Length: 615
Ligand SMILES: Cc1ncc(C[n+]2csc(CCOP(=O)(O)OP(=O)(O)O)c2C)c(N)n1
Ligand SMILES: [Mg+2]
Image 1 (cartoon, rainbow, N blue to C red):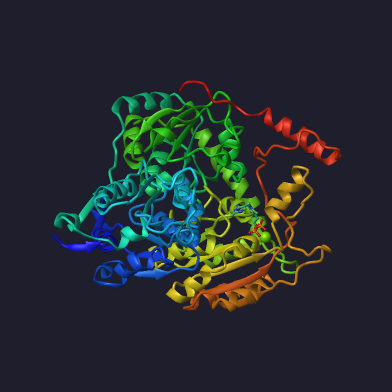
Image 2: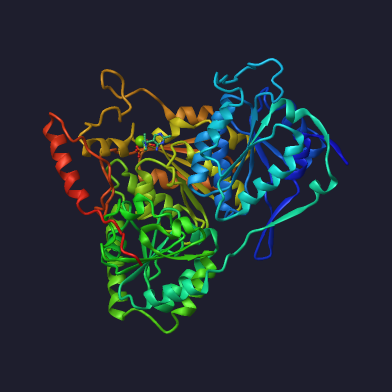
């Protein structure tokens, strides 16, 4: 019976966990990111520094929020078969995890969080950074992680550790339940020794299942599908995580069904495929949205049906039926859909076989191709740069897309770029488009880029980050530099929040607080490029698109992380397909513009469908 501290046992255990799917075995948790404080340095810190730590390399990050983004991005890039552990101190180190944890859980991505916690024995409380809830000494700040975690536990005695570890690994590797998993570790318990059963440290393989759908559900779905005349697939992130892209392409081609993509599903069908409609929803293309609006059947695969996908309930027709293929019944049941609960690849194969011989009419497919070409012409114009004008954001995106090889990855999360990227980026590979739009968390970009690069070092990683997002979390640049994780960061500076500025104006809020300026409304003398250079990145400043192209080539060839700073015009917007997004406008206001915005809002709201028709 090995005698180890709780922290040593935990670290030893983590180094011996594996995931397996389709015969591929991966380390489930190959590394640990962290920041030490008094709440984890003596327990987890000592364990990672000792012999147990040999199997779990440690990486120092600069912000706890950032490291959770890094872990989530790593997991997304690994199709949820592998993730990172994150260790923090108690108090603020622990609460800094909350935002990242929410992002991971919302995006259905596994991350293992190991915050320190206040003494279980309470010998001299309150300890530094203890919350002290007068209603109960049982409450600590790590309780804030409960609602954003899919499994949450506090290890108050060593005996509790084995069962908690097994439960944590199960949830991390379960495609239905996965998300943030938190094991809060009181600082005294971390250092406590215990005689552990030897078997706890055996190599353990977590087989990630490919759940097969119920035969009767597939038969029901096939009946609905083969009766459709204008079906459309909405492909979400689940298609990519399941490795179902080939199955999707076969299904689409065999049955002549066009495919529209959510943010997480973008790249499921490569750009240029005659049945690829591209982005759908609020940030969608005119091709996808027109087909979606006229569809009599929506086949949602691995999608959460967020408001961006459904245009807040206004995109699909009131009579449209839904057949939803999803690994979780929770998502499959949305929009009154006919539920096919199972792994996306398995379900697509089963549904395809059950629909054998059926295909849409040629005229329908021809209309898909024509709408696709019409959108491509609009996109071409937006991506094209006027050599004499200040670069537009869409021309910047075009230049980065041109510089990126087919397997290279673009990373983004918040602001106006995710919408432009969703519509305009041309993906040749399902892992080449990495826009975090479940939580759309400012600050994800650089930290997420690190996770992407760590998971796929053979790909070039292009981080597109707005000035607002950059200012929220530039610090992870230091981590990229220190760890030798090479990123190409394109810092798109439009002096404030172009996205929220535009939204503010459209809802009658007069762009209040959306430009970076001083109290006299003069532009701020803030130099973000100098900031990036001061954090250790190589800096290239560019003014024109031609300079940007040269800088991208240089940054690709470089071995170090490069930040390319480019200024764009916040008032020039990309093309959009006019889909509606529900952001309520003030019902009463003295201002005419706000009253007009409210009238427009009420008109828009009328188009909302309930989708209560049973499938
Ligand atoms: C952490 C966080 N806080 C606030 C928001 C709300 N928000 C969404 S986009 C945005 C502005 C982003 O600015 P920037 O990165 O410069 O992009 P731009 O809008 O200029 O394209 C804000 C404040 C958010 N998504 N995330
Ligand atoms: Mg901006």
